Length: 74
Image 1 (cartoon, rainbow, N blue to C red):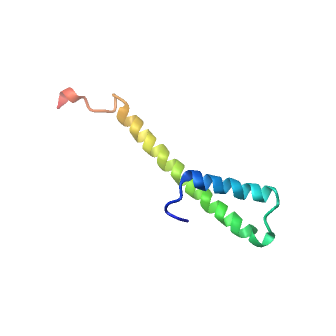
Image 2: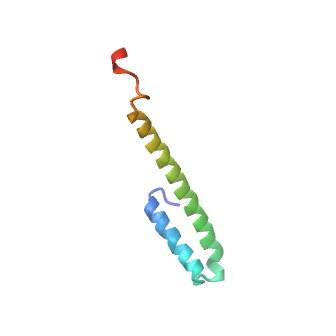
Image 3: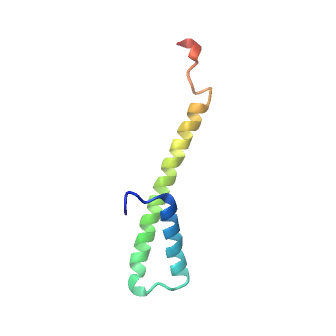
């Protein structure tokens, strides 16, 4: 998998693979490769979503006045 792959690109490719499999347009000779690639893309997307969720939660926590030290105490 390339380091420059974006979530949107991975998701789009995953949708395409799913469509090909559902439509039975994938040859049995390449089905294993498609399933392996889909697995890699799912893992990539899950990691990206977890990282984004963590980052958003961190930002939200920083914005919460209860979590920030009182500036008057400094």
